Image 1 (cartoon, rainbow, N blue to C red):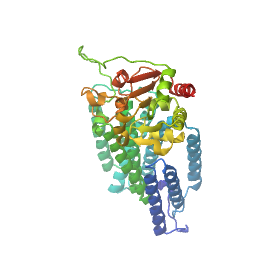
Image 2: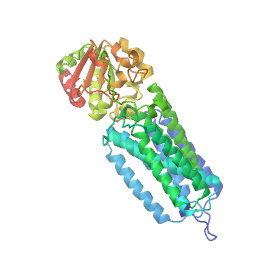
Image 3: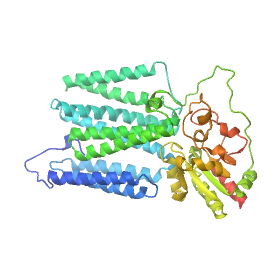
Length: 474
């Protein structure tokens, strides 16, 4: 857990634990981590999963602190206290709507930590590293560095500090390829000259630059995928650090995070019907000016309605499916959404929630928000479990969702989201869309749903609109 710079073996040090005991506790910690991940698969058991993972991490840290020859306790404990204060304060103060940004920052911190440990190992073992250790340290340094800056770019996009649309320039992939080749060349040179500060510095700079250049051409619509991928990278960096330090806890934990991140990335790509290479290299979300004057947009007209009109439709409905999106998160309307659902449920309306896998800005974003608002878990349904029910539903209420309900994904081969599985909300008798403005979604295209004959548009802040609807119905 700690850099070799702080680990020394002396004849006077009394061994408080045997290696067998240490490895056994590490194995118990790893088991708790795996159970924690399993329980995180459901909102109902997620709290238990977090508790088990916390117990596992506490056991691993305590065991590492008891490792024979560990010195520098003052510095280590000081760092732990600082980290605990920052993490605790952030967890308490962070808004649920900003959870994706926090996850991106945590991914970056994991990558930075691995890179710093690798750098400390280089400094304390200059000239004395075997090939395997040198290889794992280099991988930890490179992957950790690009994860750090890549996560910062993802955070900046999510926070709106830089454009959410892809930032591209001519020859971008060529530049990235040159950086990769240069990193490989410097790594080979470092193998021949392990004491070369110049080569090591060059590798650090290139890895940090690659993280920036790899993320800026990726659009905001792909942030759920990128967050998963960066999470996997951070785990891989930790695992490489574990191999270098011969620490089984780091190896197992990093491997778990890396593998789960890759699986989640695959799930997100499948939810968008796109390959990972398409996400990384296609600049999805970039608005391309069309030169074809004959190209037509959605047919029909967008029809705005008043709160009273929408309230009447909802009051007379027998069944309702609510589809939340990032607009609900931005307006912090999850509690107002639950209030409306509870009221209609009390009036005998069948209320359910349809959750698209990539709704929001990270996997499970909508589930987290609705769980915070105490929406019953049994009312939440995934796309594949509820998509066939829209055709027999009286009303669908779309709250701030856009691309995940766009019929163009099924009917328009020229659309950038064509082939992406979407919620079939247009099949309902009536579709009510709560939207702040007529602006497009992350994909940068018009939504055909808004122009359908059975669609009612209610413009305004989602939270305010929902509160007015409940008041009008009461």
